[in-house]
Length: 164
Image 1 (cartoon, rainbow, N blue to C red):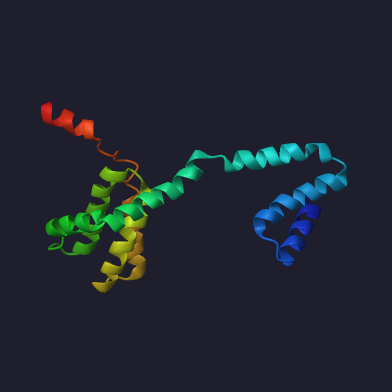
Image 2 (image 1 turned 30 degrees about the vertical axis):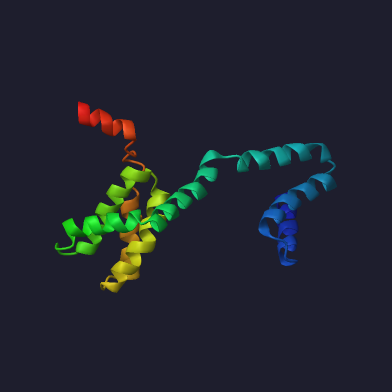
């Protein structure tokens, strides 16, 4: 059965059908040809359950949050703040990248938002200062992992810290 699925799938791809439709039509066609058309609702229910995923839905929104923060100037201010502390050190731009990620994690709490917002600002800046693109991307990716570890500071948390 797997050989038939693979051959039908490859034929659908060769005629120019997008992959998602090939993955949908190939098993559906094989179920109909096999006489198991009663199993089609199970196939489509499993397809829907695979798409109905909260993390899958959250990724574009985290990227949108990063882009909004980038366009609003928050990331530029964070980078300038980090530069005031770290730029005088050897490898200062890499330190700025890491400190900016730590500070941005306190705002978003998301590695995806951190990478999309700070990466578009810091990678070109690091390239301009003589770092390789690979190194700049690696530092940005490695430092953005701290996003989920540091939770965002909420307004009432700040008030509790001031009183306590």
